[in-house]
Image (cartoon, rainbow, N blue to C red; front, top):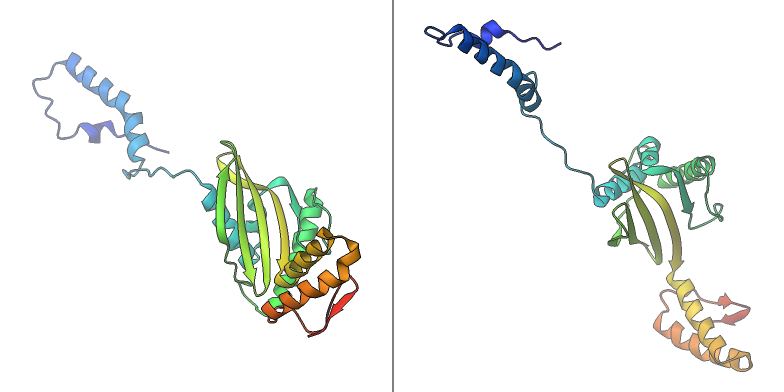
Length: 232
């Protein structure tokens, strides 16, 4: 409880020669200004620092740190209650819709990462988001995209942040991974179909030989795609 010692407040103040009405006015002034003094300086006389509002970048940094540490409590607080997720790989193939699915899917991901890391303490992985781009959609919604590079695999991530009660929460994540090997085969197959199936194998062979010669460090020997084999 905060107690006001008026005697101490007036101690040392020269009251001689001041009429009773003036003293009453002085006392009224002290009482009226006291709430302001308490608000500004606090009960112990310290200035109160106002905290800056959280930004999307702050929320994203919290998310990345919590995920790298596999800290479930911190990680879950980064998301809205009914956040939806498209995970990049099996066994989570379909969209995650409910809090129950969210917890089951992510705890499974946490468990696999922790086991594969070989570590006994955080951080359990090294996350280095690249090409981070935040695009405000409205005052309360921001779209954030970035890449994750892991050897020959590129992770594409889209995160939808929504402002809730003065803090930013993840409302949706869409994640996908593509390897350089997959990208090259897709490029070849699209070229094949662009010219029609009658010349598919001939064009495939031509494209494959060219791609293999330029990207031998990516495509494994004796590679097979759509039933067609290229050996180099």
